[in-house]
Length: 403
Image (tube, rainbow, N blue to C red; front, side, top):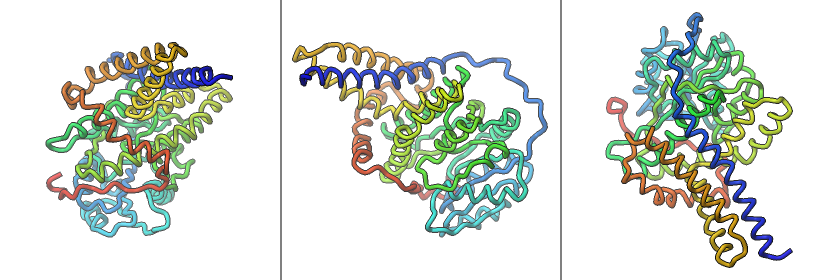
């Protein structure tokens, strides 16, 4: 077989492979425009007994601000359980002063959010609540959101994921604004599109509610880089696919420090890519065996890599197709990739116009190529030596009174 034929076949396969995530992304973005049902289902049920787990590792500068958004939403302060995980600061004492239940865990051989949450679940097993809500120690949850996700979890008997967005710091750089927009696309637009189509979503790590009967069946004790994403997949495979609640909102803040931002992004994106490579096939196989369309929807959603990487892969393949076309080998891959590029651009512009104009100006939108170049080493590092261990993002040391 000649080199020209091999190149054509290889590029064609790459073109088809890229078409899947681009089409999924486009469909999700368009579906997010669908008008929400103006007559939502009334949840006729008693208020569930709630326990709130907050894993915290050296969060003394932000834990008070976080708890001040949570405590007004609960009837009793002891319902809020802070797991002070391998802390060497005042996190535990601050949480106690505010009246919450504090569990102190010391185990340097098993570090990470998953181990802390598992420790909290073991504590709750002595007197299980109806619903467990999980909120990160550096997040603020909008008033009324806890009741909304807890009640839906109780009624649906499924995990419920609130909308989890990132706020930009004061005087944000273009990179900050683009990061917040990318986060918005991943954690608001795409899950909302899936919800409008009647499909489940992936878990995004905080602002989540679980029926006790569901969460007690899984183990969270791991140092998985994206333990939330894996948890959502495990629960979906067991028959409890997560649902998206756009009426509840959880907010985090993008780190100001360059090193912290890179650490955070590396953990998220390496974890996402590893999960994509290892979990898509089992999900598709399970969807066929169990005849479940929801598992196929989750698999297709998981097929969409981080948006910057998707653009990079498309660009690299397009350049290769141009070379093949110039040498008169084949123009088919080039035409297909050009069409895919148009679809990708339409999806991004539609999403920006509907959801992103408040955080990303048109001028800043044009800076996206520089943002992609900033992330390029991150993807090379994944090929060379992917991150395996959970690494906590270094917090910006801002006193809680100023948060």
